[in-house]
Length: 174
Image (cartoon, rainbow, N blue to C red):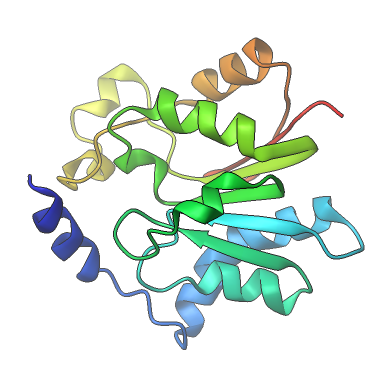
C-alpha cells in the first residue's frame, strides 16, 4: 500500500468532530487520562490525530494545551521538538511500520512523570488471532497484547494501568 492509498483509506473513517458517538468512543481514553492528569493545565500531544482531531479538542476543552502530529493530516515537525506532560495515541499505534521508532520518540518527548495514553485493541491469543476482525484492516500492521505492554513497562521502568478495555496508560518515572 502506498502512502497516498493509506491516506485515502484513513479518509474513509468517520472522524466527524460533531459526532456524539465519536466523542463517546474517544471518552474511553479521555476520561481516565483526565482523571490521572489531575488539576492544572498540562501540555499534551495528540500523536496520530488523523483528519478529525476530536480528542485534542476534548482535552483542550478540559483546560489542557494541545499540539497535533500526524504524518498525513498534521505533519508538524515542530511538535516533535518539545516535551510534553502527556501524549495520546488513539487507534494509531497499529499503523506504525516500526513501532520501536515511535516508542523511543515518545520516551524522549515525555517529561519526567509524563503519561502516554494509548487506545488500541489488544490481540487475542494465538488461536483466535487468525479470525480476529481487527487485523483485517489493511493499514493495521502492528499488533500488541497486554503482555507486550507489561514488558514495555518493566523494560522502561514505567508505571502501567489498563483503566478501560482497549486503553493503556503508562507513566514515566519522575
